[in-house]
Image 1: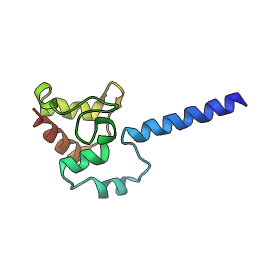
Image 2: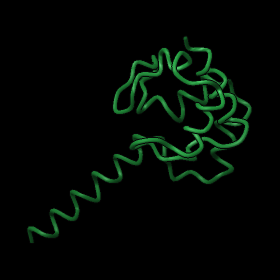
Image 3: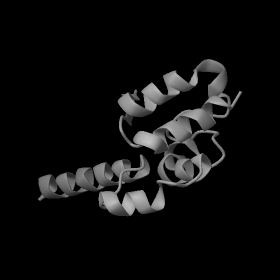
Image 4: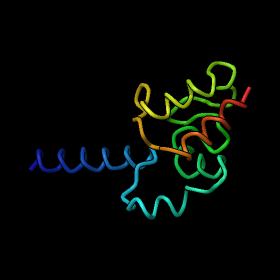
Length: 108
């Protein structure tokens, strides 16, 4: 009985962690409808703010308020693409990733 409870709790914790990092169970077309074509800030708010904070001050993930002082747009794009630390790669792709990388690179 204890094992079943422990497994259930671990599964719930994993599900919450994935949700907090911007993962969702939306189909690609639903994701494209909400993110593609949006402004960089809107894309960030939808996909990144749960970990990095809506004000970029950081939560589970680090603060991004001055990330442009530390990393270039290309470096930020690489982090978005490949991930870093506990951040999985590929949460944003294509034009959305480039828009957000450019916007974050301006944060000096």
